[in-house]
Length: 233
Image (tube, rainbow, N blue to C red; front, side, top):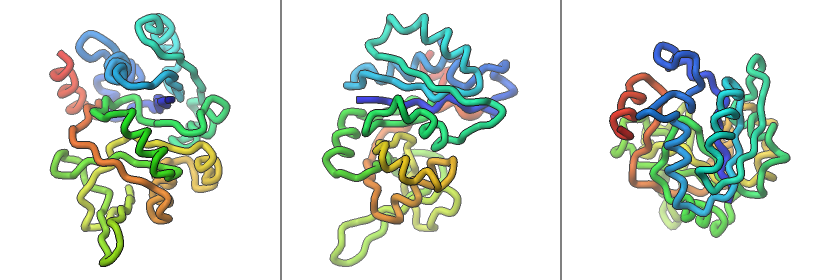
């Protein structure tokens, strides 16, 4: 089982506290945040972790080379030109040669409380080309962007839209995707943002939805970084 980490962003919202570091390398409880992310996956069956790197790639590479002996994983890497960012979907397309036929992808600034094995098994068993994880909006303070749609005589369906969510939306994108590489490459024309592929897949009934109960920990803002410091301390 492969996990792909999107770690190419500059983290502009953290510029006041990041000291020029990429988000995953910001110190949280005396260790780079990426350490806590990797540690959170140790009980899973993940065997390979691929890093999509951009800003601060050299810092990641130096740290992960030193850290490698502490973890069971094979690490692989792809990089992008910082002056020409590829976007989340573009970073995956740029990593095509390293990707398994099906893989899990998430952001490197988030520790998820998800059973990776169950999520991946759900993806394979339902045979959807893409599977999204989601959490009820009542469990988080993030604006909901997934609506549950029920039609008489039909099983419930879900619709995801990041930019223009339906008013009835009651779930939030949890941040982990299972994705078929072939499907990703087929939809490359939709643009550089993974959210466009997710929206298309949900609208086309190509997407499965896997519910998670526990909130995630992220460091996207100074406020959430402070909460992460308190949690891991």
